[in-house]
Length: 195
Image 1 (cartoon, rainbow, N blue to C red):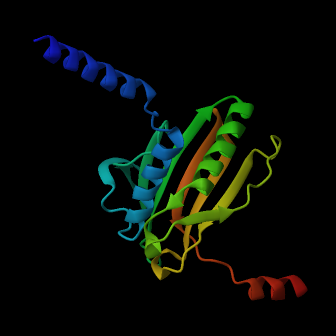
Image 2 (image 1 turned 180 degrees about the horizontal axis):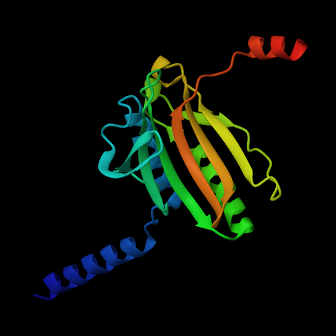
């Protein structure tokens, strides 16, 4: 009986010590997991992520997203009424408030989290988003930083993640938008610059 009790106490002690020393899941990891689910469903035009219908926006049907980023205020999918393009976009609101400094911090943090996330889907390789953080100015009241997914997969070649900081009547907002955006050919922009 003493041996059984001693073994039981030892087992409980070991389990408690392991529980106390295990690492908590980081916010970056949770963000990366959510972003990977969103990117994976891009090839399905976000259909698998589409939840309940929300009030319509101008020229778009809007739906709640079944996958949302940690600490986001809300996530939605927008399906536009366009004859030329039937692709949808995914959006997360990551900040809404009247403090410019807080909005700017969230703008930079959202950009950094997207950039450091390793995307596991396309090409079955550890791809990532590449882009440059655009400078901000409180007087301009709007900034957009675009990140393009680095991949050889033709289905994802136009996938872009844009982090936007903008002011409105209620203060400041920060959004992360994921959608299709055709790349502008470098040669064409060079020719335009010469004219």
